[in-house]
Amino acid sequence: SGKAEALLADVRRQTLRAIEEADVLLMVVDARAGPLPEDTEVAAVLREARKPVLLVANKVDDPKHTTAIYEFHALGLGEPLAVSARHGLGTGDLLDEVVVLLPEVGEGEGEGEATGTRVAVVGRPNVGKSSLVNALLGEERVVVAASPGTTRDAVDTHLEFGGRSFVLVDTAGLRRPSRVDGAIERYSVSR
Image (cartoon, rainbow, N blue to C red; front, side, top):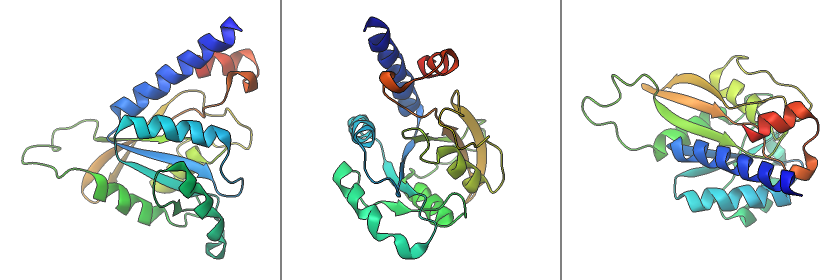
């Protein structure tokens, strides 16, 4: 339908804007669910961006269960990093990887920046993007709920790590127009 196509175009525009403004991209996937068609679509958009992308396999609550994450190699985004946002496992290693991908801060650069380096957290609904942002921050700053669509708009949160300032951009989960339910979610996805 025309409405579904318009909605998809709006979602794509909002996602591309967040990707364009970011210095580093984190694609969060659900390690328990395995790769889904929506993950493949998001990965294709991120590869086109030609920016540093880290593939983050969330919901690896037991370090012994990391073998399932290797299915995500098929997305073409490199080695998946196993994390558990719920338990904070792997988040320090993830932040270290983000810092490695950043360009060096030149003299006078970064000190007067009010915003910091932008890191966009992207993925389909319910993969744990907001939980991951909270784990990286070390506190509950973003509302987390079991139902998809809790994050209604991109949320910017500041973080200091390794002497650098970051802005974590927690984006709304991307879903196909046929799966968007209710007027509020349609409005937030279109924004």
